[in-house]
Length: 139
Image (cartoon, rainbow, N blue to C red):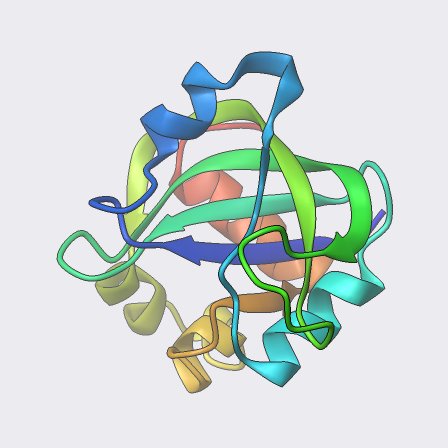
């Protein structure tokens, strides 16, 4: 299993919106960055991702799971863009903010800290464990 972080503006699609979709989950659509798209193409069924609220919240708020492999994004006719489907697994007990991540030296090499604009990014197993601990849940 690999780990990821996926960003969404909570005004457009929030953690609560994903939770409301239940086991059916939702397409992670609308990504128009090649590196983020390529990251989704690398995802496998069962991979886990942090759900990150971007913009004003700037915090990891939950964990989701990949339930469908990369496929054409239904929000465009452009064949260059793919997406995966994800479902909510569990919320973090405490949101882990970008500020908290930047303050923790164990996360200094994390893509969220170094390349904060990338909407879909890899997370190492060590980074995953740190953020889970900060968020009050078991990795």
